[in-house]
Image (cartoon, rainbow, N blue to C red):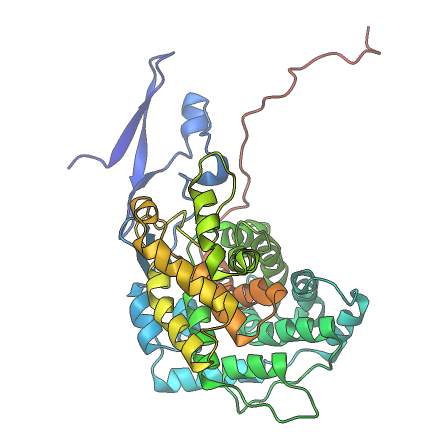
Length: 429
């Protein structure tokens, strides 16, 4: 049987080497280039690592051409239909869906960790009152290791598991507190009797003087958003978590690095940009003018929330969330409000206009999640925080997988140097 290799030839020297082909269970294969420099004296050049696999992973699989997203082999459509967010968390962490007793235990463990240390809460008073909640999240999550240093031995599997549980459990409390601090309201403590999403919404919107009832449709919609954003393969923030972790950094510091990466508008801020676009359009009657600008190749204006860098035909998450978005707007009776009316009219144009259809500029998950979060009452500067809360389990699952990877080593990308060649300092004779 022939060895599974690919041959690389240097035309300048005529030298050839065979590189092993690495095949996964699905998707395109790669070839192992670790000997390339020693054998031929070359590096690969791949800005943004678009064509480079940095690891082997069994957590999430994406096929952008077929519009496929799998968590541990399960299609996202099936998980969205049959599972809640904590079940998805269990699946991503442990590789299998929980049975009833496993789920009850996992839920109990998460509930036990939802409160945060009171000393950590005092950190909030050190931030300006108008600090962006994502700035607060980066600082507070990074500081977790100062309060929970009893579980930061990354060589201990039990410590890793405890840290994972703590991050998943405490992120809603940290996120809600960042919002409460920004508007000058008292922090609200979690209630063990409430579900994960209900607890977060209560901590976000309740005040001590009034009983707060969570709208069931809002809970359902937000839970779906969390499921759809739980993981997405080796994206910028996940790669950041892995790179930070590769140095031996503790999981709290590594996740804080992931939050910082997610904060960028090209990554986690896309649904926020959707709402800004809708607010700029302002009136459904103005849509035609903005669509015309978007079609003009000489105009830099872009409509936000359409198409996707990875999904070439359709975003499977958008297909799932679209109906939820429409149902929520009806339940909350917001359909006739200008912003949501504009959104629905713009969606209709994108789904029917040949320009959008030919270029596959379908409404993506950011388009619908932005509308949902706005309808629920989540302020614009909290959109990316919600994303971070959802993605925490993906980051920590990737981190746990990396810690068990025998091929794991500190990340150290190379470069093609384009600066000045070696030269003498003017003071040298």
